[in-house]
Length: 183
Image 1 (spheres, one colour):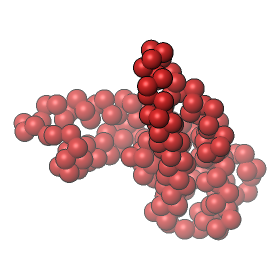
Image 2 (cartoon, one colour; image 1 turned 180 degrees about the vertical axis):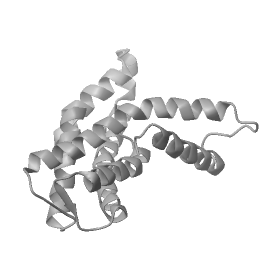
Image 3 (cartoon, rainbow, N blue to C red; image 1 turned 60 degrees about the horizontal axis):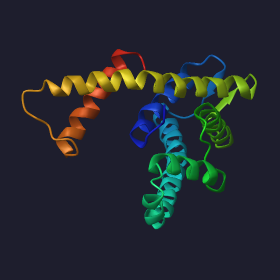
C-alpha cells in the first residue's frame, strides 16, 4: 500500500512507541520529539514522490494531443513515465525497498542526533522501524474502511473536504487505530 501524507503522523507515533518499548533501544528523548522527527523524514520522502507526480503530469499535459491522437492509456503512460523519472527524483517505487530506505533514514537520523542508542546491530533496530511502518499500512486499509462506514451512519451528513469532516475522520481514525493496536 502507498503511504500518504495523512498517514505519517500515525506511523511516526507507532515507530516512536515501538522504539521506546524495544529492549535493545535506549531512548534519550521523549516519544513526542522522536515522532516529530520521524514524521518530518516520512513527509520529505512523500513530498519527493508528489513532486515527481506533478512533473509527470506536466509532461503528459504537454503531450495531450498526441495521447488523444494515438488513443493511448493515460494511466499507463503516467506509470511508465514516472518509473522512468523516479531515479532522477530520488524516489523508490517498490514499497518494500522504499520502506526499508525510510527505516534507514530514520535510524541514521535518530542515532546521529542522539535521540536513541542501541546495543545491537543497526539491522535489528532498522527492522523494528520497518516492521512498524509495514504493519501500520497493512492495518490502515481495514481501519479506514471501518471509519468511513461509521461516518456513513452519522445522524448529520458530513461533507468530505470540510474542516468538520476532517476533524471527525481523524478522531474516529485514531480511535480505530488504538482499538486495533496499531497506535
